[in-house]
Length: 162
Image 1 (cartoon, rainbow, N blue to C red):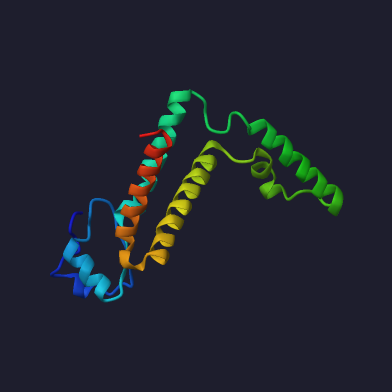
Image 2 (cartoon, rainbow, N blue to C red; image 1 turned 120 degrees about the horizontal axis):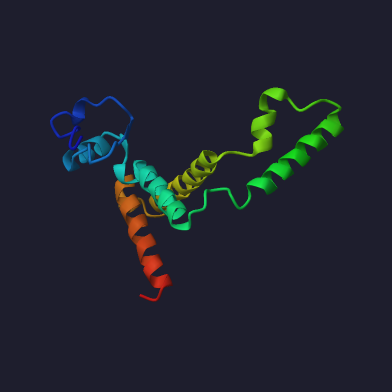
């Protein structure tokens, strides 16, 4: 909900960390008040990026008409079967039945999507956190997230010669 935290209620927020939901729930004035009190605000720009990332994955999948993992699923299954067999030979014990099937399968499509999402979110957070460390004058994670985004767009344009 937009501006759910605003200048009139920001001083009553007891949390040390505010993780924004979508649509700008912290007003500009509230953000200043919270930061002045030492409250960390993770901006919706970053926190809600996961939905956009997964939508992009779905778009790519639909364009190619190829499910995630199709190109490597059988290779991964064979590799995991070889690992399980080697562990059984080395230990003289059977691979635990309660995890055997999941391990041998090597992960479903949703596991690949989650892995990709985690990778994107971690690397994005790394860029944002690095910017704050290198340029403390940016002042907050929201500004750093915008700077990181603009730099990434500029790099993409530069890469194609624009």
